[in-house]
Amino acid sequence: MAQRTILILGGGIGGLVASNVLKDKLGERADIKVVEKKRYFQFPPSYPWLMLGERKPEQVQREFGLLGKKGIGVVRGEVSSIDLERRSVQVNGSGIDYDYLIIALGAQYAPERIPGLLENSYHIYDLESALKFQKALKDFSGGTIAVGVSSLPFKCPAAPYEAALLINHYFKGRGLGDKVKIRFFTPEGLPLPSAGPDIGNSMFDFMKSRRIDAKFKVKLKEVKSGEAIFEDGSTIPFDLLFAVPPHRCSPAVEKAGLLDQTGWIPVEPTTMRTRYDGVYAVGDVTSVPTPSGFVPYLPKAGVFAHRQAEVVANNIAVEIKGRGRAKTWDGSGACFLMTGGGYAGFVKGTWFATPHPAIKFHSPSKVWYMQRVLFEKYWMRHWF
Ligand SMILES: Cc1cc2nc3c(=O)[nH]c(=O)nc-3n(C[C@H](O)[C@H](O)[C@H](O)COP(=O)(O)OP(=O)(O)OC[C@H]3O[C@@H](n4cnc5c(N)ncnc54)[C@H](O)[C@@H]3O)c2cc1C
Image (tube, rainbow, N blue to C red; front, side, top):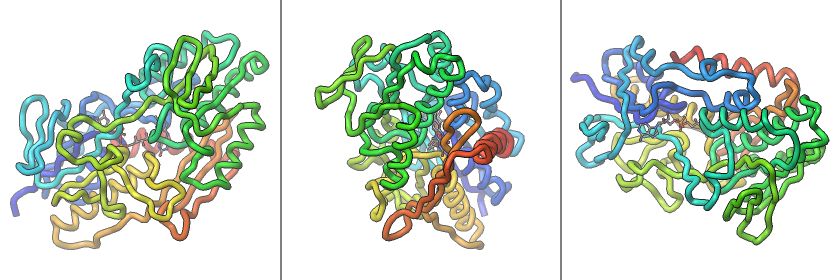
């Protein structure tokens, strides 16, 4: 049988897992190509450590070129358009044809959607921004730090809460605990809404125990120097602002007509199939409905991208080989939430369980923190 071409758009968490699993399962039977605009794979769960100055960039990134040693092709360039009828993708002005397509382009940021946000705020949603925020924290000697979420959806439901707790602990460690006040804000009704009200309330209590004020159900409308202004007219004055920027889908995906009303790619939740034959989407680029969930769509998280990519890669391999067992994904996942001082909590569960997602929160401990450190080591070594 002629060699099939499997094109994977994006080499982040979903694309990296999909390419590795496909190579393991198919060897030379398929030409596996990852299209990626960046030179390095960068591991976002390590950005909170970058923010605190506890990691250097070289510790949390790997060169994509290393995949070549495994026989995975890497095309360095920007996907500019996807032609689903002709089964071809435009990269750097040339067309690459495919038999199977896995779209794993993640989410992009659109700070320009909120006036004043870009000029007046920091975040840790990419490596360079995390480094800038590290410096801002280092130079900060007292006042109010507003930490929050500008709009929904955003990736990693735990990340902004984790950031608030870590920043709080960081200033205590510098002896500035009494001089720094953290004020949290978010459009969500409670922390981690997809995990349900019990976990949300525990998290809220935990924040209160750390003297972090939180304002829920507020959407950021505008930022002026020193003031965050919300749609309901309320404000938070700040000396330093950390705000998760608005997220949007890649323009190439939008132009291809793949999006639904959510602004993301709708997929069949257990197989990640799109409505186009042989075309799959995994990770943050998707909208995955959760009919029995606490929220209508699955949150965006690397652990989901990982599990979805494994299922998609397995099923494509089964189809190409004509043997093996097709798999489905059950919406399971887990994530750590660092709370400062070498402690982390752990959330684990199945988001598609009925009548409601079955999710458990394990209280912060040093053991979960150690697991978090091992999780980073696994990611930095296993896939390259
Ligand atoms: C601070 C922070 C902490 C986090 N912590 C956790 C955690 O502890 N656990 C967890 O599960 N998740 C965590 N996440 C979320 C997790 O990183 C994402 O959900 C995950 O990376 C999504 O994987 P993905 O493959 O869909 O997209 P990504 O990993 O974002 O990969 C998309 C890739 O596509 C590339 N790309 C985009 N557009 C183009 C284009 N046009 N052409 C070519 N290439 C393109 C990008 O460069 C990128 O490499 C965290 C995120 C952040 C920001």
